[in-house]
Length: 561
Image (cartoon, helix red, strand yellow):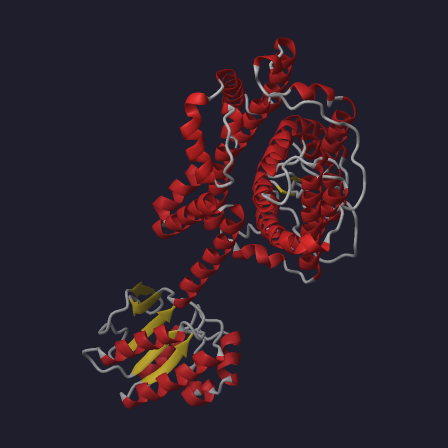
């Protein structure tokens, strides 16, 4: 059964494709799901500002215009586009040293990165580059997000312990925290541990309730009642409320060249993570998927973030799961989330001044720990040790080198792994049990399907890098066989094309086999492969009567000869 989400056919430009048509039966459920998402997401959004290094109110702003922009221009009915820990970590790593954290200049740079990222996403939409997400494999994505989880959790330890840390490198931060551990402020640590305990307890015993929000409200209430600030526990302090002011971030051409790599790294993470998440939920609910339209929605969301004084937004797997778990089934849920957050920024920012910084750090810590995908790593270890090692290398690179370099390494490793699979694909000898029943055996000279007939299966296209391996194995099957080989048949069921270099190699192979009185033939030749063979002059060289649609016909022709 086909489980892929169907591609949406172009039908003109329409707004709110992820919301319309509104179904009355689902509208109330979507609205309630939006309220639930807001309750769970407000404390997370505050936590993401600690990762990104921006003012607290900017986290709430990611849940306003960016949500509305994606709902208007995107196509996914489920994808939640807001602040995300991975892109927040990339932003913080890239902006380190360019401006003071939490300053007005720092926020301006963060908004400019969001604008540049929107430009990259818009270009990707114009050139229909939605396929780029396929070049970040799930294996390295598991490793990357695990590394980000460790990196972020290390970064907030100083806030949870109230110890001084000056290093910007995760390993340096961890070593400093360990060295300063005897100087930890115990009341600050007690607040952090209490928040973590509350969040984990609700996650385990009542996962549908907003445990993080309850923990934040409890911390604010206790701080106001017991004067945490007076007891040496650092608090956020006054938070400016109100709706965001709409304006383009200051565009400084001298700094843009330094921000482009940060925006590029955010772009890659957004495209890969958002596409995987949107595809998964569209497939699960049998809904149409338009990846290029979602690129436009993501571009609009980041442009809205840039113009409303906040930072890069991304399609979030965890927040999308929150909406689905709460019963939401369209972007209407996200619009109701934006409505709730708007009420918060207008009327409820006053109490945030009492929020302990260690409580916010603890919220971030719980978010980061959830990113460490131990289950996914263990599954990789059991099923593919090579891919498990690949994921571990990626995770280690993020922790040691930083998020920005980690994602570049993740892409490089994904591409190298793809090249490795194509360069040395699976090969086999085909042996026949009955007339129509064939089995694959390891490649070994001397294994014949019929006396003098060897059927060789090659599991990838023939191109300049794989042609040498192909020819080596074919020649070994002929040269090292104890019995003479008259026909060497290539089962081309997995071969869809041959490039120019591989075509030249096949011509040399054909001549070499002729010197050993062996003929080269192909079975399971599809239309694309046949066109390639014609174009390269191989059909004429090998002979039309040596190219077969079915392996059975090939064997019959050999027996007849």
